[in-house]
Image (tube, rainbow, N blue to C red; front, side, top):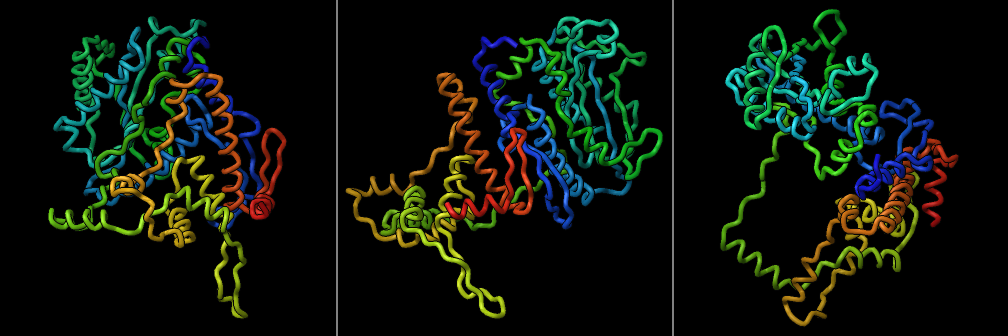
Length: 447
């Protein structure tokens, strides 16, 4: 890849930091929820790049968990005669058309397809996934040449895991072809479908619990197909530098996996009663006249560090807790780690910090006027800018130093978190570092 682009060099530095030997580790003697021991591996800090195999695998696991929850919600809303079916909707290969344009056309065709009366009459719930390949891979391999945008183009298709009634294969092809043709016509793109029946290729398979011969697919197999990567990682190695650079410079990627219908998580209803206009005015007046000023988190953390207390838990002869244990110094380190890594504190950490520094909530008369008081009360910690956004405005060398420091802090924070979760596990990095969960906790408490 040409490194004339600042974005390309920055993405390369993030990928290198994520794949570094000191960031990759193996784990022995992990304890599952069922009480069984197993081994694992992973990375402590993530670059969150679409080009990174490790981060893509992590993203895939999270998506699969959400899809399984969605399928359970869909099962609860199933009607008589509904079955889970795995459907594939393909498109012709668009030679000479950029990937972003192809994807926008396919998504436009999908939106048109969803609005058709036939689809609305059969679909109840589902999951949609996208995938693309580099033209006809078999033809390229047989001819022994490299992929070319002008000659081969991109082949895009949609995978659906749909809870629906009977699906007529021919009707499905007709409905999808009409939607695809209309989407291509809107951007003046030729939809060249070269099949004997004149329809886009579609495929329908019934989802079953156990593997069978024929046009069947297991539930796990269908979930893996829908949730797999947008494309294979070897595809990125085959793409020309110019096309790969366009993917890197994209500020926001569109959602590649989407829950449909009854699979979606229902929105939480607002349970708090609405205040009237008079009640809101009275509440605002009471807030302006309040004598207590909420102390900022930074001041509370400094108080924990300067005036903190540390004592062990005390129990009686029967094992009942007489006096709870307190470790303000560990709480302060935990809060600063969350601020450094996540940019914000978890709510349970906030409650613990406020509870341990309640003596700071006393009357404050240092403000000259009400306006200065309100500015201090409603001051909020600003959210940290994403690393890729900072790259646009910072010097590259200074940005690389900041990224290296960020990865170091995240690794140390994750080291403590993993030790707390798996205190009896053994961790080994590819750089040769070895540590045990109990040892890390003892060093952290001593510090």
